[in-house]
Image (tube, rainbow, N blue to C red):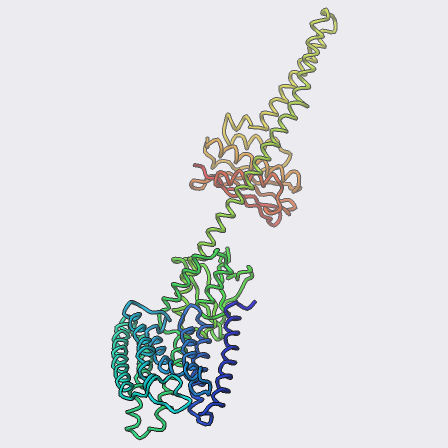
Length: 573
């Protein structure tokens, strides 16, 4: 999809082509249609517009491009004075010196495209007053032959000469102020930047001075007929040189960075918007923003596709971006459009902060989602456990107790006889059965050995009662640990051994529990058929993982060669 700005600039370029063609056609029909110089102004206007549109497209955050387009419009207005339409001649005559004011405006805004400080603002306002207001005595009192006398008020050459003198003096003052401001501004840049900017600004000042002073000097050198062409050529070179330097770089893009920061902070923070902001700031529609993969093995684009960085001999280049010492991504750009990697790196540093902010937001969002899912699973597990306990009580212990109650009523109502010992024996057996059921129920909720003797003893008793050969190592477990740690560790071992018996078909199992610093490490390794993975584990292991997450622990399940290895870590504090 083509960005809206590029579409608008393409439409503006088409309007400009049509406008220049129309003006050329009008000049051809005018009284100076056979004079080559009459076509010089539309040509210069086209140069300004073309350079401005290119700079605007490549450096949207820099206002120098729009200003160059305005300069082209000023030259096009001046060329209207060479037509045969009275209203257009009036426009061209009144705006005859506006192009010079635009060039001065360009000098004050170069290279960022914006006025800096009150002094520059005042100087630019003054030069437009000189170009428009102080031009009035010249066109109002200078006699011109028809049809160029449409704005003549009265033929007073003396007043016209006085007005021209005042205009030249005031214009010279503005130019001197401009030179002083430019010299002071150059001192703010580094040596390398001054080497680029100083010649360009000097050329711009020369082009401005060539209008009031160049004519006399060139005539003294015998170039009277070509003086206007030379002056026009100097002004025509301004957009070419200025746009070339802006597109090349070579100066600190503080304005572009400021606009970039504003766009980033006001956006939604999506990677697509961030990449578009980077491309706009660099003036490179092909620029892409990559972010580091979670395992730091490569770079991913906005769609999550792995992307390789360009080779050194390609036209594409890349600048890595980082937050502190931690790499977070890279900016890939067209090195033919931006040969100043430092400018790209400056944009990248801002983008890195935005990328890291997005990463943190994603992690927080993922953590919240995982917490909600874990909480839901824990609630479901608790509900299932309560239902299991209620079912066991109803179907097991309650039945035995009801039967005992019935037998007790029978003994109470019947006289003691020969069958009484048998009835008492059955009651004793039922009591033992009910007690066993109660012990099993309690043991399922919280094993008695775990409560009474600790984790190591409980795991030993669990292993002893299972129908599989288990190599047990619990020597590294302290006598007692915090109750939540002991219960969670016990159920990890119990669930792992249950999975081995039900699904693995293993002949040997190794269970190891040890403390590693401040954490309890649990490992269960079997020689079964394998095929179990953490991602595909059942609800039992998923529930354990939720319990471990609550306590800050971790759980990994991986296939070995052969068998399965389960490893859990649990903080002991």
